[in-house]
Image (cartoon, rainbow, N blue to C red; front, side, top):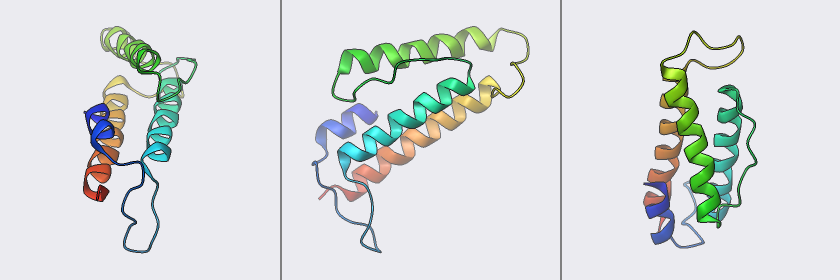
Length: 107
């Protein structure tokens, strides 16, 4: 969903009520930075891709999905890592939140 929203959104987004907010490219970078941090909470160490490299982003997200699927049937997570169900909710919420924000702030 985020990729479809990004494709339609202008590079410069309408500013928030207090005059702030990230533009499209910075918001996508932020989402990927967060996904990288969330992947670490699943025990993964991945190279964070450039958001404009669709194939690299696909591989990055596929690796996270593979870890989620493998972890869903595994024993409890390693200490300090997130439970799989929490990770899935957190990743989905964060991505959707910024997709909706981008849609709302598109001019």
